[in-house]
Image (tube, rainbow, N blue to C red):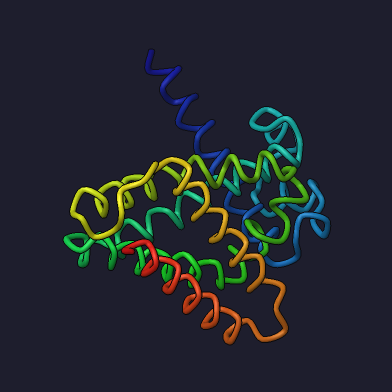
Amino acid sequence: MAHRTKHDLRSAATRERLMSAARRLFGERGYGGVGTEEIVQAAGVTRGALYHQFRDKKDLFAAVAEAVEAEVTRRITEGVQPVAADPVEALRTGIRIFLEACADPEVERILLLDGPAVMGSAAWRDLSSRYGLGQLQAVLGAAMAAGAIVRQPVVPLAHLVIGALDEAALYIARAEDPETARAQCVAVLDRMIRGLRD
């Protein structure tokens, strides 16, 4: 049993080293600019260790993208805590935090620029939905329960809002002036959220 536990710990440590090295390299140069040999060298592991943990480079990228998505979701959750009593303000704050997080070059490259191309749009949207959708549904539901926004079917509303957020993040990532684009998107999304009160 102790031997198995040590093996599991070593395996988890190897996986973490691979993901950390891959995240840094993918974030710096993009998926297409990084080879598996460079990843294993940066992680200090063998090629066999890579293929023991992941099917291929694409599988490693998907794991890295999921870790980045989980981190962004944590940032939003922590960031809205101070305004959680006001569901509409929590929603507006969460939107701002999401768009700010997406401005991080590593997040932008992995989640927005490479994510849809490497994972495919369906898998990329599924990843976004698994992390952000539940959180968004909870906030929208709380806002409706508090009478802060008009009651309506929460699931389709959450899908539409998360779609708008993903498109806003992609628009900002591709903009010539990302700062201006982000300010414009925040303003548009704020108006959209305020419109839910009618």
